[in-house]
Structures are given as structure tokens and as C-alpha cells.
Length: 83
Image 1 (cartoon, rainbow, N blue to C red):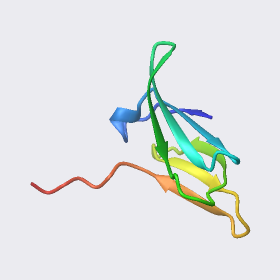
Image 2: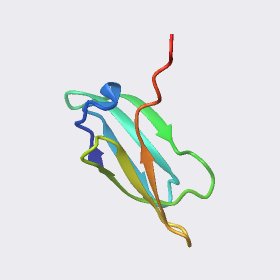
Image 3: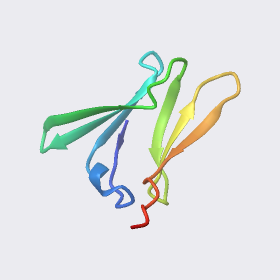
Image 4: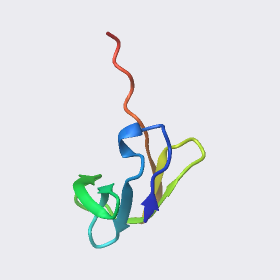
């Protein structure tokens, strides 16, 4: 579980991120004080066994994928659109 406190993805600041091996996805909860006001499923693909979530010094979110060939996944802000 991770409370996100970076400005890299401003909309996620103050959100709660939760992983679970059996859930096979990353859940982002949007909080208002001590109430959940929104919920989003991320990395929701069959076979994703997500063991750990943490925030790096760069503000990105890192998730350990628990498979035979273990991977570390990185989530950050989408690239800015040229206008």
C-alpha cells in the first residue's frame, strides 16, 4: 500500500495505491479526508500478480510483478501533448 505524495502526477497526489496477488491489478483510491470518493483499476490484465508498490525519488510509482521472470513496472505521467 502506498500513499502517493509526489507532484509528478498531480491528480494522484494524496491517493492510496494498493496491490494484491489475488486481485491481479493495482487499485488507486481517491480520498477526501478519510472517505473514498473514487476508485480506479490500473494494470488490470489477466496474469498480473503484483506484489509490492512504492514511490521512487523521481515521483514515479514502481510495482514488483511476481511472475517466473520477475519484473519491476514503472508508472509515471503520460507524455505532454504538443499543441
